[in-house]
Length: 159
Image (cartoon, rainbow, N blue to C red; front, side, top):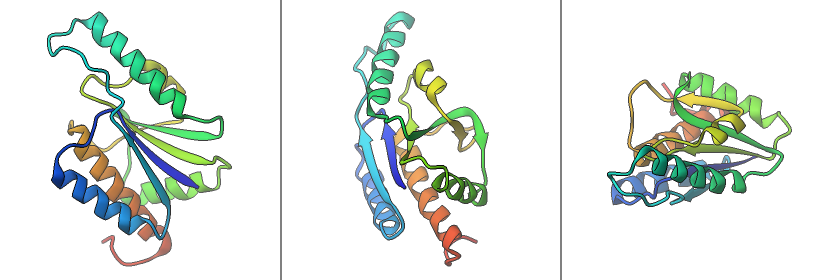
């Protein structure tokens, strides 16, 4: 199984880049993790609803174009299901047996995610009722994937 994180926004701050790099390195013995970032449409901070909606649709087109027929799509969304780390590990194990070729995790930008992407999603997952910057969400997701594989393998890390 291949794994891919699709982040609409670009990861800019060095401390996020370093943390993500560290967890990707730790994850490498267990899984292949690709990171796609920077799909965000540039719009004015004072953009009207119609302009925001057009930008979300364009971002959605870019995301959907990355997906294959045998890809599983997990959208991170505040309205999604919350899971414990053990439940994430079980979810990953279950998806590994699903016959799909890749799990894609999508993290939206400041304006959210296209409704078409949410409709295509196989799962909506929420880390928390709190809102996180997209860069932090990528770091949290990368760490949780690493933690899930440590749990699956019965190796020390998770307590």
